[in-house]
Image 1 (cartoon, rainbow, N blue to C red):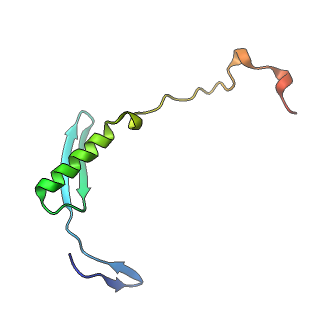
Image 2 (cartoon, rainbow, N blue to C red; image 1 turned 180 degrees about the vertical axis):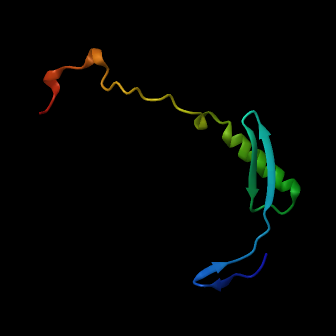
Image 3 (tube, rainbow, N blue to C red; image 1 turned 120 degrees about the horizontal axis):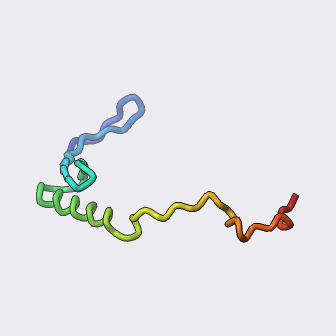
Length: 81
């Protein structure tokens, strides 16, 4: 890692980055791993990233229907105007 320097008002610093390539049914993906000290640690962090992608909270939510409110519960008398 280099020492930070200022260039045209920007602070810049060179850092080593591991590029981990992964594949699944959706295709190929590259994961840049910034804080690994070696390849083994980069693979471990990539596995953590994969785990985060497969957690239930990251699954797509069902789409909200365009019918709001549902037609059977709509009453014209509820309109404020």
